[in-house]
Image 1 (cartoon, rainbow over the protein chains, first blue to last red):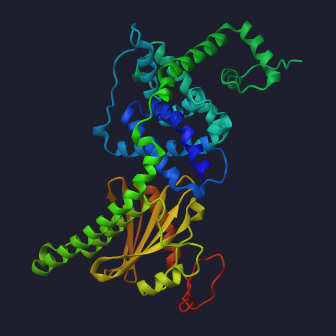
Image 2 (cartoon, each protein chain N blue to C red):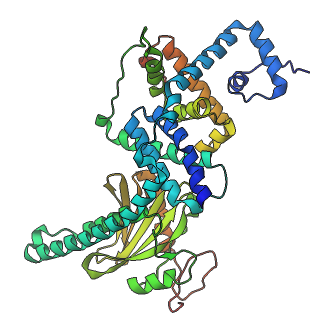
Length: 163
Length: 273
């Protein structure tokens, strides 16, 4: 009982980091984390001693997908353009560039990439979080990386490929 | 010993992510030494990784806001219950006022079907956030269906939605419009998403599945034999309709209350309690 709570608690900083990278906005990100924690706390009976970290990341990933779906139904609320070109210089330039590059990815590619490079999950764990085969995780990763590279190399968002 | 088969792009990713089997590492390194374009690609991916970590890594070190502390979240859970109680009283008052207004001005009276869906969504919103008492009686308790059936006045069954990953938590009894009782069944997915099925007598003509959006939640309702059903959950029309259709079909195909009851079906026969 206590250890269930403690297991959740030790994962909160990582959940915040992941949520911030997913949602960009700090308040939205913490909203996602809060909702994740509420769900986890009330769902103790659903947790059968697997990997707590993957379970929490799965909850947060699903919540974020639902959030984006409901935003998509109200397109006026979404800033559709983030039209600045990559920054040429400045101390913050790298951070802003990568932020914009991530924002251009489709949700499942961004999720896969962040879980691997930011959170250090294995391909197998990401496949479980996203409920897809490992091969799908790998192709999401490959597309995410190719697109970020194209953006950082100076191509414009207009070149975003929609498959 | 090294394996010298040509390196694939998947292996380059696995190399960057530390997922490459030990026996292929030397082969990839040798490959990269001889293929500068691939080496540049690998370097670019590594830079991306560093940029992402540099941008977001520090978030984990930020001081924890109060609202993300578990003690505080469980306390709120308890406070929720009193809000839920207050809201339930509010719903009674509103229902009372609506009834009284309907008495004087029948033209403006809300339709029973609208009130029904409103009650269903209110109940959904209130009880899915309950940590300790989302339901009164658990699914595995034998008296769940007899009890609710008796109070609603018709043999009820809780549809089996396990093929969609939903398991039945249990149910509770609630007030509905015009003094009727309502049964609320709650279902849950493996990641804690909750769906409810609200059932009550409803003197309305038979109707097919209708979707109502209630903000972040939505419901699909239908009427069958003067019994109204509303299946509520996260606002995802396709998914809710699929679930509602499955529930509807199971209800429609229910065997007569006295006929044979298979162990896999949560069917109720009258008198068993």
